[in-house]
Amino acid sequence: ARCGVAPAGDLPAGWPPRVAVGFFGLVYRNLAATLPSIERHVFAPLDAAPLRYDVLLHAMLVLREPLGGANTLAPPAWVTARNGTGHVRLDPYSFVLLRPCAFEIEDQALALRAIAARQARLLRAVPDLWHDNYRSVHNYLVALRSLG
Image (cartoon, rainbow, N blue to C red; front, side):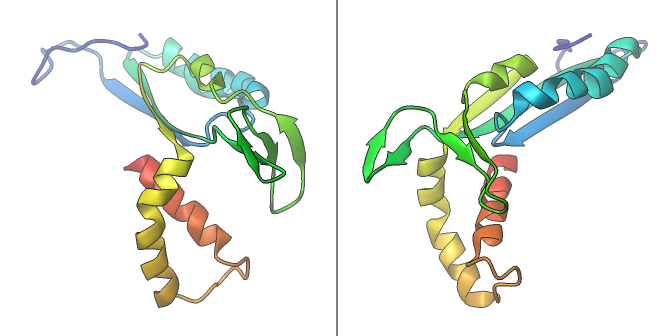
């Protein structure tokens, strides 16, 4: 059963095991395209198993898009920096398609401010191994925040 509620403390004998399925980061990046596969390969087997599972989510939302130096509250058009694909307007709230049992949403701009000092210390300590002006390190720090 999805989003099963368990009593506090130890489970009574005979209760099915409980599993957590976690999603984090820029969850909405291409969810419309990947959801059928997630449903088929993750949720369907869990639904068929004699267990309970919870879908937990922490999403970093990019709520502002720079347009010619101005900011707008429109959801961003996604462009993948590594390969230039994208230019697709995204729905930052498509994470609800995952039907999470519990979720937390964080504005990525605010999160980036919170990790700026940590990133600055790290950048002084390590070389730019990916030769991408520390973009990969930056993405890693954002992912760690989302996992935390």
